[in-house]
Length: 353
Image 1 (cartoon, helix red, strand yellow):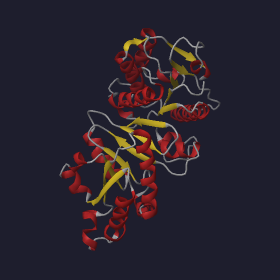
Image 2 (cartoon, one colour):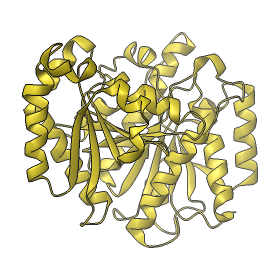
Image 3 (tube, one colour):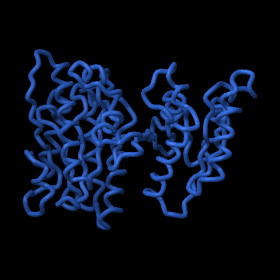
Image 4 (tube, rainbow, N blue to C red):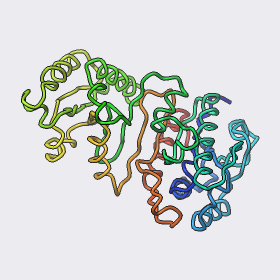
């Protein structure tokens, strides 16, 4: 049934904290439901071999407890959970075949992460009423097995045949939209111009219309590219000649978002002005992600891709290899990712997730 809302969860890198936070988050959202897994109606499919959750003894204990306490099964096809009556549980591990073998665990980890992501996307293209949670990946280990993308975002854009996507980090403290994603600093200026700003605005407007009521008008703060917002042209004329005129035009034409700026980033965050806006539009990765991650360290944030035909979210952290397998990983961000997808499911089928 292609119209059944469901959630796909990728393995991520099995040598990182992905398996640990996935298990902890899944346990938390099951317990938050009315009566445990029995009332958990949304099909959740975790793409990975059970063995990938048993690499570390501490994580294996989490997996054993989850399987023991709840009705979770292993499947070989997503059809088993998306066709009523064919599955006894709504939470499943889907065993992803791995054709390749490798002589060391690091290469095997890359192969497993790549296979999990590919299979999840394959299934989402067949059953497009699903949402996607991607666990953290190691770009180094993926790159070693032929993954030639900057990250999940670029890969998903390619697989879903979308020309333009953007990344937005959502948290209780602030929501940050990135003009550029995984781009070297010396290439950022080339990606910041009136044309690319208009592309981002269109993606944002479409996203707002899909996610909020039609009469919503979100306030957006646009951060400057240069220090001190160009200092009136003394440092750079970009803000004065390009950004300010573009913002004035956008204020006249957009009925969905209200854009203000450009704001000097350091002063903007120092003065806590983010509390006055629904979205902060940053020009490059670290300009936006450093403040949002500092503010959401304890409450957790999620990364969401704007422009895809599906909802895709991920936790706001990496593989954290230094604490992997030690039962020290904080699952808050992954819990928020599950909650975001469950909320989406509720809005799409009108019943309890």
